[in-house]
Length: 39
Image (cartoon, rainbow, N blue to C red; front, side, top):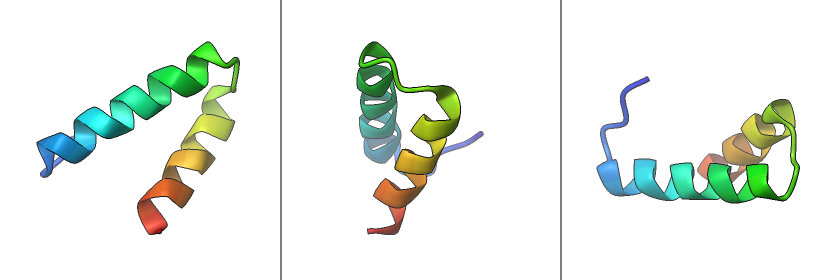
């Protein structure tokens, strides 16, 4: 997967890592990231 906006890619990765530390599953993580992108 290629991210055109590298700053956005970094923030998405950080958000993903934080969610994983909270014990959120990969599927829930993807749903939350999609909601995040659509705001």
